[in-house]
Length: 112
Image 1 (cartoon, rainbow, N blue to C red):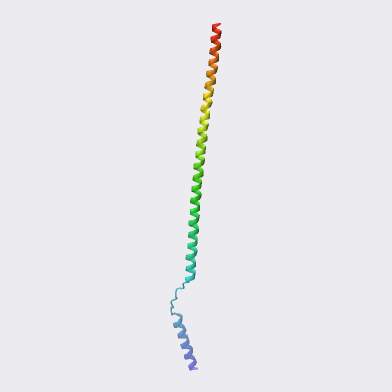
Image 2 (image 1 turned 135 degrees about the vertical axis):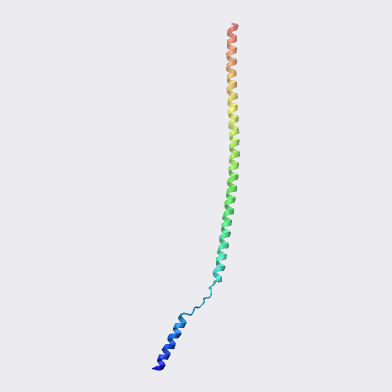
């Protein structure tokens, strides 16, 4: 019985000392996860760069289309101004024709 008490006492002492013992843990690193993360980030960066380049190309095309449309509009505006001026000239000539007709008719009346 005496031996049993000693064994239980030693066992209890071992448990007490082992419960207070601090153990350091090793840092767990997964190199394959880090490598995959780098690959995924690189692919994402390439895709975002490609998207940005496409947006720039689309904007440049939009600028070209705008410039062509502006040239066309300016040409139409100049033709419109030319037609407006031609109508003014036409109206002026018609007025001069009418005035000349009145002058000729009134001059003939005066002669008679």
